[in-house]
Length: 179
Image 1 (cartoon, rainbow, N blue to C red):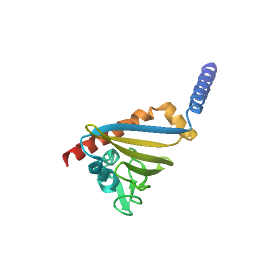
Image 2 (tube, rainbow, N blue to C red):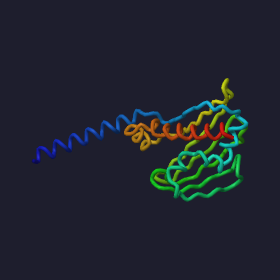
Image 3 (cartoon, rainbow, N blue to C red):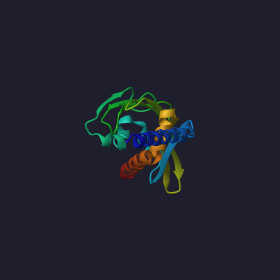
Image 4 (cartoon, rainbow, N blue to C red):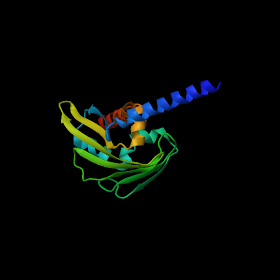
């Protein structure tokens, strides 16, 4: 019995060591992004992103927790427009704020999470005219501290976040092409 416990302990230590070693090889920053082509002009799509209330009409994270507590701050659109949220485990708690002057081709935001863990990342939306409308790209990027590297080793974060970005962009497409 003692021999089995020692063997299990050694295997556990080796597995943990392997996980930590693999995490240490991950880059110090991350970037996730998804794109979609929308049959509408950038001028028509931009207000659906640059206005926090309109952004939240298609934001997939708002749909994950209908009981989420929300507060809007600052102007309704453009730099300084902010949205505070406090949701369940699917959403977490934090703030999204538009941080840079935006034109018809970009909107930049800062996402500051306080739960389930502290994180500060940048979100960029770029809108490029395309033959059949506008190519919209939703990207999130930021630093990867060691705990984040461990998470990226254990879970396919690009796939998890990408699935949400794809859903949101599909809803944005429906909204932009309908109005």
